[in-house]
Image (tube, rainbow, N blue to C red; front, side, top):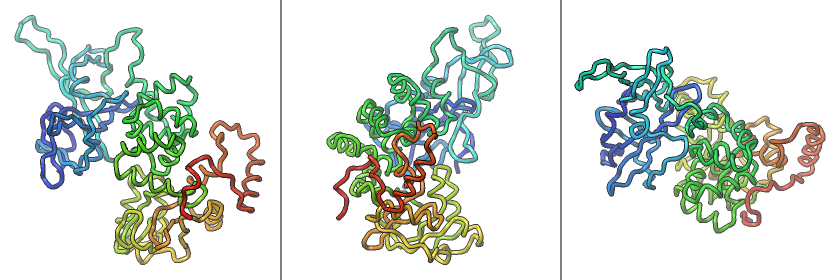
Length: 443
């Protein structure tokens, strides 16, 4: 059973195990990122594996913390840990810092930090164990200790000191990815690259997905190959494929080789399709279950906080295996339909019999017409053997249809563009989006 609150200093040296009980390494530190109005969020652990190599283990890979040991999923990137801007090591950098109490009762030194499991998942700093200055002249005297919430103190800073990296990133922590992207694009180019370089990998990946491709390429190519590969690992496979397609072929292959094999395989698979087809638009990460899965299990999968809303609108049911390309595609079950049935109902009995999948080489115009005609949020994509390979969502189609400058467009000629889009859909002459490579799709 995972503890709900743990002191970081006590985690140092704890053994990390995989699900089979094999020893992975030992904890050396806990990594957090600052947030604007909330306590810092734990992003992962720094673990020392055999060979004295220190690697990063995402907190999402940790299944249990407690009883002097930590259990992980067993999937660990053994690339040597490199600290990113905005990340703070609790033991190495936070312990020993001076803080000032907000109630004007003086200052204290941080001696330990407790992290607490959040109701929605993940961990964050909950309390600080601090020591006040000693009041006695005795050499052996120590100051009084106390616990305080994160919001009860502030870090002591020198007047006129430049804003620290973590404080800068914290000011952007509450922005949605699209707003963060726009904020970065409003900065002078050099400042944009500087701030982008300081963002955590996942946060930068979210922002890149919302940027025009020219800025994506500009930022990615200045990160360095290893960091760029880490950021691509965090992007949605279809967005990563679109970005890699804009790079010189040699650089794209180099980055794919540096990515996690599973993520790179998805991207390579998507790059085989032309950009104006269902295969070129689809994402390879829908929710996929067996026909025996229940409504309760399906709803639990939809409740994942990291799931895009369009992907949570329906669940795909297939024969095994359940990773694209799956076994034979059986059908989809819509979220609203699941709400009308008891938790124990099998999803195989709730399939939408009126929805036919499209093939990977179906044109973007046809996919758009299907989504609009049947008021769908997503449509499944199958290969020639009727195996599910992905789904096209409405946001994939919008990204394809909207002009390149839609993020900066002032909206004065929206009516004209809507009329043009309607004409294009009617004639099937949708202009190619400057996305993936052309000419390498299936015949």
